[in-house]
Image (cartoon, rainbow, N blue to C red; front, side, top):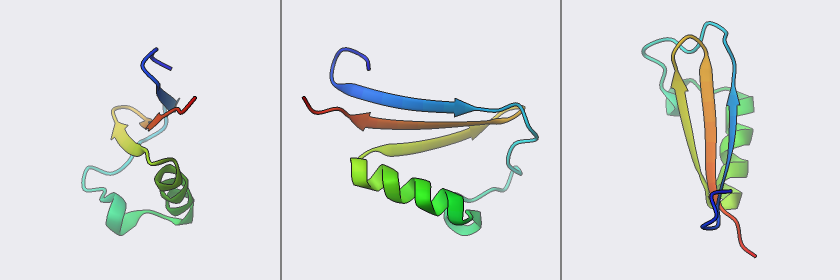
Length: 64
């Protein structure tokens, strides 16, 4: 948490990453569908990036 009620979860790997033309909406598999559904339930955002691997970051609001 960042002290303002915003939480995040970040997962990284150092694999081959996604292809340059990767389109999450078109090419995602069932695993990404599940992650997107869970992120939507949290009212959060999913950001995927790749640079010598993949970085998946989920940003969400943490309610007290």
